[in-house]
Length: 385
Image (tube, rainbow, N blue to C red; front, side, top):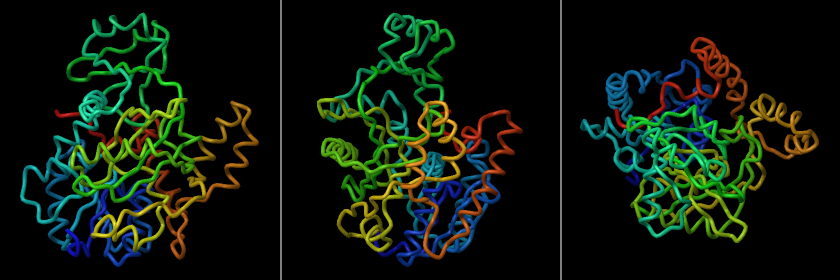
């Protein structure tokens, strides 16, 4: 792969991480093509985007999506495809079923599915010798009844989910009446861990760690995606990530939700086999591309300033601060945080976020769902169909 990636396709162009990755690779001399389903995602407005291609929605038209991606690769002379969001699953399925003339920076669908599933990921970590929180699979109402009396000690969540959607955190037993797991749509009950949550973003090649950023998210969109990010350092968290990528011979991007207990022990909660906001702590194009796409040494984050999306902070962070009485803390965060969409000489994406938000809001209104749900509805992957 090194030396054969001058023209790169980055998918998931709606995501700030896709924009950031495009800027890094363009700065390192790559020609960057972007693709996604929305009409005007933020990354398409960037000067680093050589061309933007609109694709069919993979969740609802997977065959058309696969054919469109393959046609795009041939038309643009793509030499490497880098997914950033949950379209990675649909791309992996396409690569398994056809001779696509460019490598995909991701593992096969079987491994992707194993780590994305919140039960099988814990079992994988356990097999690798890692300490894990007790996690029980719930396939039926009978399984729910078996843990009902301990509900206040547990966290309940679907095995296929994102952004903490549908999570029940230490619920009273009566709240469990609302969930109905099945073999097709199972849930897990996981021991609640009292500690400090750590997020990890990593890139690996053949099981070797090439980039790692550890951080925390004191502000979130509801319970879900972070919108303000602060770097942290933790040796136990690094070791955990290293053991998982080595034990799976991972190639591609991978991210984790971890929990550090009071005694310093770090436990894995779940895994997202895609890019997350830790990518924003890397801003040196040459070093990042050399490590991730070439044979260079592991690249360390070169940003220490907290990163944020100011628009999201106004939409989600301010109301939360007003409810909790944390307005002074919110003001401090807004002063100290660096707008992660900012990039020297490339101002257009900051303005483009309004157009992109309007498109998502329109979809949310038409479907009667939240903004957050609308932002990923067409690319979500909820297990083998």
